[in-house]
Image (tube, rainbow, N blue to C red):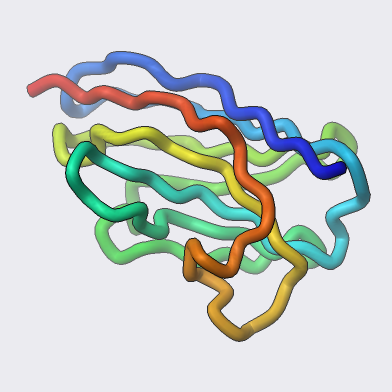
Length: 125
């Protein structure tokens, strides 16, 4: 059974940084794509960033390019999201998600099979 556990959320001032972690367990992820999605109050869940576990190819939403960086530690089966230059509009619950990799709908939340419980990120102005 795949389990994803996020950590690292919190309250930060605009311009600050946070690093989120997603500890993955239950199988090997070499054929998977893992991603971060976020959901703000009253809004739909949106794609933030994703990484193909094997090979490390990454995908970023336009509004986080240059500010957020995704990475993974194969030995620890852990994915990270380094968030810099945070803005109030980044405030949301951030979710870690995973699915077997396919180029079809690779960045669509509905295509992901496994989800973490979410971690709150709040950016004050």
